Image (cartoon, rainbow, N blue to C red; front, side, top):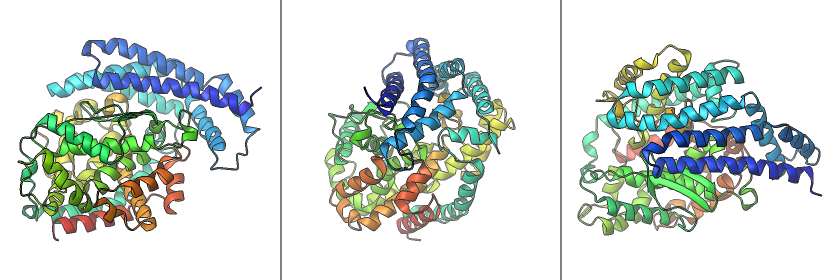
Amino acid sequence: MGTALDALKAHLAEIHNLAMVNWLLQWDQNTHMPPDGSPARAAQQSTIQRLRHELLVSDATARLLEQAAQEVDLEDFDSDDASLIRVARRDYDDASVLPSAFVAEYTTATTTAFDIWRKAKADNDWSAFMPALQRILDLKLHEAELRGYEDHVYDAFLGGWEHGLTTRQVQALFDSEKPALVELIKAVSEQQDRVDDSFLHQPFDVDTQRALARFAAEAFSVDFGAWADLAEAPHPFCLQIATGDIRITTRYNPTFFNPGFYATLHETGHGLHGRGFAPEIDGTYLSDMDAGSMAVAESQSRTWENLVGRSRAYWEWMLPQVQTFFPQQFAGVEADAMYRAVNKARPQFIRVEADELTYNLHIMLRMEIELEMVTGALPLKAVPEAWAAKFQAYFGITPPDDAQGALQDVHWSSGGIGMFVGYALGNMLAVQYYNAALRAHPSIPDQIARGDFSTLHGWLRDHIYRPGRKYTADELTRRVTGESLQTRDHVAYLEAKFKDVYAL
């Protein structure tokens, strides 16, 4: 006879497996599914999510949690078993307020909305997407009512991505960082001619870009025996089905080097995170990367995309490699020029192509829009106009169309209201974690300049990856850095970097 803890683990593993099946369906929808498959896919994912929800909120879950808690020292906060019970109990409490019929309806709405969004974006037609988004927003507002909230309705949206995070806390962080960003952006904008990135804007054969993307990923220790080969998606993403099954996607621009290259580094960072979970929790309820902290997950993609991939040390090693793929385009380009070019900071419309300096302003804009959407202050038909006005106020430029404005991101079609905040917090956490790694291993930049990423990867694996979703973002950050999330490190990093890039 097994223990109650064993029975709980087996029960939760079934719930976890259903989540992974749902991710596989989503992967296929984004990469290979024909457009006419959308209605059937919505029904399939609705069934999977309903079954998963019913299993999670069942009497069996409640009984096994109670029985297992009698067998485990719950005071041992760091243990896998205590963490499993703590996290599963929290999820059980959160999910129990939602009827299964609501979960099925919500899944159908979001799955259907994806293809509507994809076509609306291609057609530059906000009005075509608006009914689907209104349905999702209505469901999300109903979910907020079911869950309840103490201060602001947006707290209920944030809680799905960052446990315990409040609107007030995010606004305080943004208010702390925004003045420094605005001042530095102003200084940089007055010296744009000091950085030339024209050689990044020329024809780049897409097949060669694919080969380079694979090389860049493998340099970060990607083993394509455990990773699906790079697929293409309208909005790049990564899914971790298991530590031995990592799915990353990218997209390429035939006349601009950055999008394909840096989307690959970004999603590789996510994949390294999911690949690095401790073997003891692989396949368990603690090993779903996407069910943990959005900010922590994003910190890892931004670490490899920016702190490594946009560093001077990286380009000292990487430029000669890139020149073997594109000898004509990068003939005569030196590492310092490449470093400055990939860090050129200027306002642009597309968030995923934004530089490090302006990126968080994109997130602040989206949060302002979402706050007005969820409180009813901004009707959906007015979102494109409000987006354009805020963009002009933030960046001094106005999107020429909705595809480069309010329709550019996939997130609202999947119900990801509140999700964007994690991108900005992830940028902050990336620097905090990287600084902790440098304190432990000051030689990391020198190793990167030789194409050796093993020390950094090992430190991240041991401190960030292995726990899976055992800890909230705040709990993990306190363990790794000795303090909570703060903006000080991120602002100092940006000031030092862009004063260097622009010789300010």
